[in-house]
Structures are given as C-alpha cells and as structure tokens.
Amino acid sequence: MAKWIIAALTALLLVTNGFWLYTIVDQANAGKYRQQERYEAKHRIAVLEKACSRLFGGMTREEASRLLGELAPGDEPFEKEGHLNTTWLSLELDRNGHVRACR
Image (tube, rainbow, N blue to C red):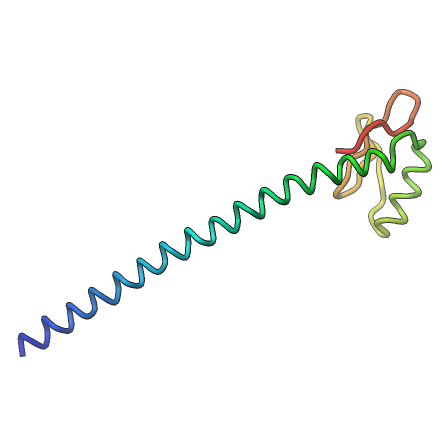
C-alpha cells in the first residue's frame, strides 16, 4: 500500500512540475508575441501620425472638423486648449485656427 502512495505522489509531482514548466514556456512565448505587437503598434502609430499630419496639415478648423465628422460618424469633434479632439485623435491648431500636427 505504501508503494502505491509513493508512486501516486511521485506521478502527481511529475505532472504538476510538467504543468508549471509548460506554463513558463507558454508565458515566455506569449511575451515574445506581445513584445512584437507593441513594436509593430509603436511604428504603426508613428506612420499614421505622419500621414495624419500630411492629410490634415494646413486645413482650417472647420474643414478638419467636417472631415473628422465624415471619418468617424457619431464622434463629434470638440475644441479644447488649442486642439481639435475626437475620441482617438487630437489635432493641434495654430493661432490662426489651422491644423499644425496630429497627436
């Protein structure tokens, strides 16, 4: 009887250690994927900010507001602290009311 208990506990120890080893390897692998996703998102955002600045750059406040309304229907642009804002985008305005850059 004691041999069965020892064998069962040994098997349980091996199974749980195998599970923890699998979890560690899985977490490391998932971490690499998350790191790659963050890298891609960071560079995608930089490119989209440049594209946004080119698209909106020089537009008047009214033109930019109208275009934002077309691009994101239901997301009403508002002006605050020299920026024209939506939920996902902020356009920096100069003193004359023209778009200077995207943030």
